[in-house]
Length: 427
Image 1 (tube, rainbow, N blue to C red):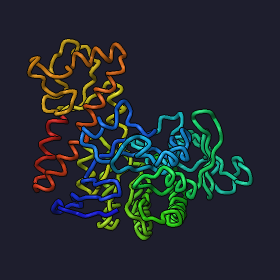
Image 2 (image 1 turned 30 degrees about the vertical axis):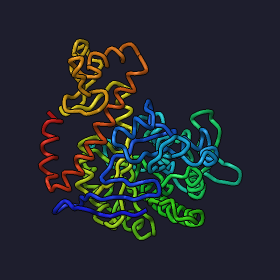
Image 3 (image 1 turned 90 degrees about the vertical axis):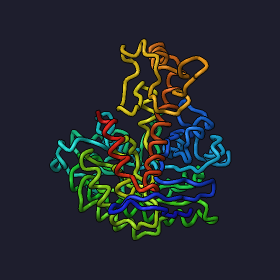
Image 4 (image 1 turned 60 degrees about the vertical axis):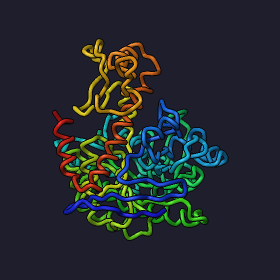
């Protein structure tokens, strides 16, 4: 992988660049659609390509469970398996440690309001290595904290790795940093991530620090295993910076991870929405500027501008596709719920400035391909086409928003474009 910076935003960390991989080029900043199970839900690869997408991201946890990473390997890797000719990424599975642990059945997101207390007080029974919450063979696991904001029902963690129960059938699995890298090499993406622990944004301070140190040790082990397997030097490994909402932990993590020989860096959750900008800036002021940076799981329009301004090169998020399947559509004036009654007889396009297939003008018929009224009808009728047309629109909107941000950097009018867009979007 090669990364070249083409232009910088004056007096900020922002930049436009190009990443070259074995399967093609990615012009940064760029949005990376999530192809969780080797598919961008509701779309064919050709549809995804026609939206302007240059790279997609698969999910290690889900592909490991189904169909199995060895199946994907034997098919020729994730790109060939899903008929995607361009660059690919896979995450490490570390986020599932959070989603199946602290977040499980509690509705705890990795993005919360800053009104929530930064750290909860220590639990009555501290989360320590001495407590044995269960075994898997000769492995000893820590018990979950006795804290109502943490529920470790499907995950247990020890120094060596993570034990978890499959959400599909309840079967028990064990993943170490080495195992995560082995799985990702089988999946065969161009860019993969080190195994990490994403903690809850409301986790207690003592555990945040403990998890961070473990993430750093896992990063070293991930890198060592990657170097053993990466004989042909085709796959690039990104290290992940963690540290929750604490400035000292974030900066410590950035310094530690940047001193390791990674090809690029991921910035992991968890954040408070209002101070996400500060957390990203803390990290990117430390990470080496000659390597690309990926903000994991972030993709709302206002967050894209924030991330770019603070030195982020890549973003991935399920929001555009998930919102689309649920009838929430992006427009230049903000998001709309297409199922609202006011759209039943609205025969205009979702967004008059949009160039996606859903919104394209159809002059011969005196209208557009698909109107708000038609989409309203599809969703109310629970037709499968609803999710496809809405996803086409949402992904086009977000992918091309980032492309326009990139162009504004090259033309040296980033702040003008940012102010123009957000003034309309937030009305």
